[in-house]
Image 1 (cartoon, rainbow, N blue to C red):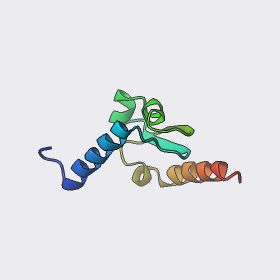
Image 2: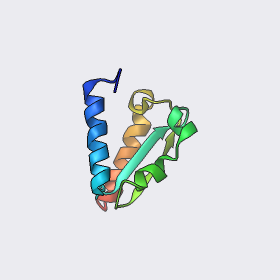
Image 3: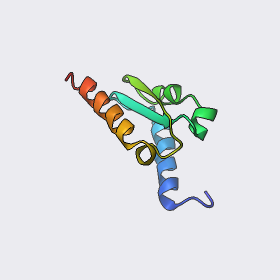
Image 4: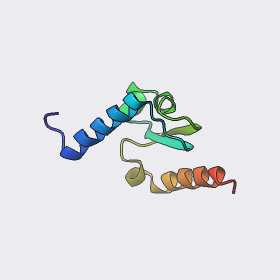
Length: 90
């Protein structure tokens, strides 16, 4: 893969191998994405991640671009805290 850093190519290789083996993420998964970014415009993030998970997938767009934690640190932290509290039954 021309132009990609080495870590990106290794990640893609691992993803392909996991999918070929039928591996799925087995824990509840939170998906957050920027509502003003490419992900919102081109993809259905919840459906994409649900296809890779055998457990519950939840999430939503935040009013940000690509860098959620940098653009909306408090909202990102709240979403993570809510997810982990709900997952742990707190």
